Length: 227
Image (cartoon, rainbow, N blue to C red; front, side, top):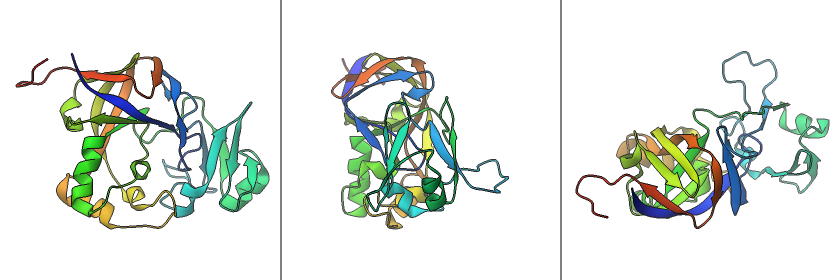
């Protein structure tokens, strides 16, 4: 194993598709980061296998800011009003029904990794450095390593070991500016045409533990690399 970088940022998303909550340190269990995507809003009358209200339907969800509170979650709306996540007024405003999931409501995997190398590569394609929150990562890793090199193996972040299962296939959500909620289609266009429509890595937790900004990241040495 060699050191390939360090943890540069940590994010959880207490309510699915709403804004990120940055953290300096966090416990990671088999089900991902503590408090991550433990709430979501269901679209009334939707009988599909994916009933969640997301940024696909409402760009402005990115401007709803949730924070874990004792004992639940408080959400600040774009107008500045704060509601408990179970407040009927919030449900009416969103047009959805709140639902709690103890194991999280993930699209594909309980943890997502994104590297500064990938962000730099994308910046060269779109002409500006993209906000990493467009891609809703849990962990941003400062590294020069190509993240796809980790797929099929494991990376260790502080005390936590993650199996890098697959590259993250992207959709229109990455076009949503997390600050304004507006769409900029060139982001997904660049990812689709130049990166095989993937950006970031999905992973599963192999060893739970505590994770903090600044923690070293280690991975198996690739052929041609040296310790």
